Image (cartoon, rainbow, N blue to C red; front, side):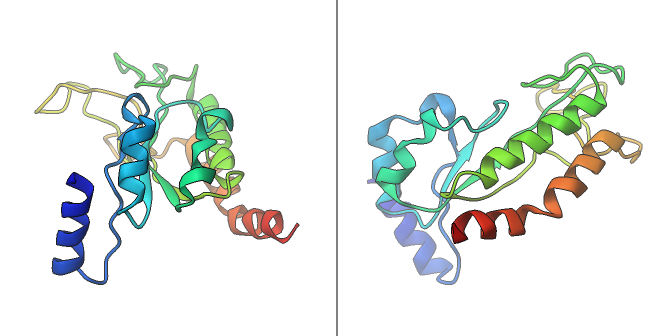
Length: 172
């Protein structure tokens, strides 16, 4: 009932916008809730803080047959002085970039996914965010706007070929 009401409200107030469901966390993706959402959402959305999309947990996408998107994922490391590397950690900035590239590749390889969104552009403040204290090294740039080369280079590499990869895989 929740998804029906929200979908109706979105279509009423924003008729030219897509309803992306609830950005499910992996721990809240029960089959019943996923199916209920899929009846009303235009695109299914998930926050998935793991090393990538391993095929087995995502087999249900064939059943619901909806486009899907990753709303949030990220990687961090402690080599820049942060107290916490984030929810999924790497040894250093170069490995963060490699992990980013592998994650995005796993999204490209899954035909039900239409994209993914990295969380977030800039690191958390070293002293922590004001509302919850989060102080993760998860950005593409530091709080002083200095880019992390490993992340930037990996993003350039994978993003320069993702459309061609998806096109080639669908043409087979």
